[in-house]
Length: 129
Image (tube, rainbow, N blue to C red):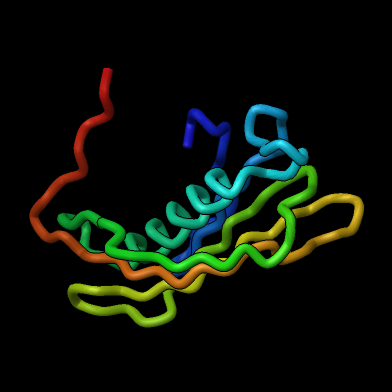
């Protein structure tokens, strides 16, 4: 997320938003946020939403996701809003929206359904130096 310049903009139990401001390095050939950026933010927002409900000694891993790109991600800011749809002991299902904010106001540009696995007794890997 640091590479993209993204930030946590909202954190509640079962709900996380991650946002990034537009810049050319995050765009595709038509000047929209790249689908890779959109899906990365959405994957992380859903993952953190699930993780927010997990016990402290656990970690999270995405098992699968399905994304629908509904409209061009054209705007000044991209926000991924992840919500836990169905919490589980091992698998958690999240619903994630990709929203763009700009001259046209707030628009949904993508929807994702995501399955995450809770890993007990396994710490996250340390960041590479």
